Amino acid sequence: MINPNYKILREYFSEKRRIVITTHRSPDGDALGSSVAIYEAFKNQGHKICIIVPNSFPDYLSFIPNSNEVIIFDQDENKAIYEIKKADTFFFLDFNDYCRIDLMESYILKNNGYKIMIDHHQSPSILADQVLSDTTICSTAELVYEFLNELDLNLSLNAAIALYTGIVTDSGSFKYNLVSSRTHLIISNLLSYNINHSEIHKNLYDNNSISRMKLLGRCLNSNFKIFHDFNTAIFYLTKKDLEDCEFKKGDTEGFVNMPLSLKGILFSALFIEHLDGIKISFRSKNSFDVNKFSRNHFNGGGHKNAAGGKVDNMTLEKTLEFFKSILDNYKNELNSST
Image (tube, rainbow, N blue to C red; front, side):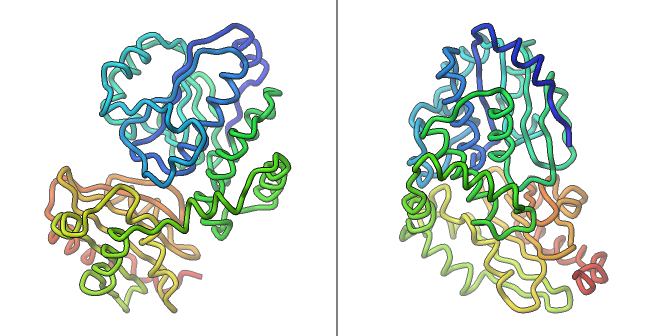
């Protein structure tokens, strides 16, 4: 765990700052929830602040308070660049490598402003002025809660909703291995703000679209493979599948977890063919390390049991063949994972 110097931070924020909050491409509930919580806390202290994300987030997260205030870089580049140039302070939330913010990277690196990183992923590469990093925590939202608490910044109802959303989504509704008693203590404190947790869960999980159901049908019917010798299962979706089913961002959320519910399956992957390459999600149970697997072979990373990757120099067919070929290297691990 890496902790920031809170004394220095208190002194730094005793003056009014111009702050930009950013997070990784395709923001999820943890990324957006953490960003909104920081936004709420520092805006209420009189700082000038905005959230800029590399690209859009799924519609089902639009219930998060102030999500309509978020500047989306690839949709409003001029406004985003203006805010980045004017900022004297940056928060990097839920990512630890500049490659995760796409075209925003070059503009931020030109600004010598004060940089604060809060993240829970492995192998950080960003050199920030202050860092809060803990890979044993299931969500960045938990770290943001602790960060704001250490700075004696009171939570608003909106911030509590945002943090609750971040923790719920990144913990798999509290089922992942990194969930701890600390997680539940934070959730208990957030519930004391009288948030409507039932409504949050409904917004997150009871919102299936026709396109999502069609895509799931494709996965289960013709685009599903099990490699029994390796306790592994995969889904894949082609560009044509996405087009035929009228894919929208967020439609495949959670698909990669489904094969892990099958008896004996310890490793699952979802391959999605986009115009700019193949996006891959990895999940595992027990001791098989998908963060290491993704970093070694698919230009990605994340956590021990949840990671992502990307391929931009192979077809989907060749990517699937490559994936199958390297499973042999992990046969012992996948058959002894407990």
